[in-house]
Image (cartoon, rainbow, N blue to C red):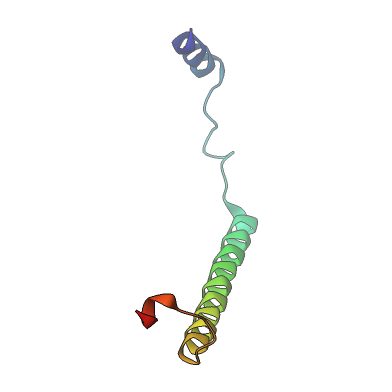
Length: 68
C-alpha cells in the first residue's frame, strides 16, 4: 500500500520547472542571520566556559574527586 501511494504521488505531482525554483535574497539573508546566531552562541559558550574554569580554580566548587 505504501509503495502505491508513493507511485501515485510521483505520477500526479510533476517536478517544478527551473524558472519556479529561486533561492533569492531572502534565503541569503536568512542564511547569514543563522550563521551570525551560531557565531554568537559559540562566543557566549566560550565565555561561560572561561567563567566556570576560573571559578573552579578559585575553589568555588566542592570537588570530591580532587580530595581523594
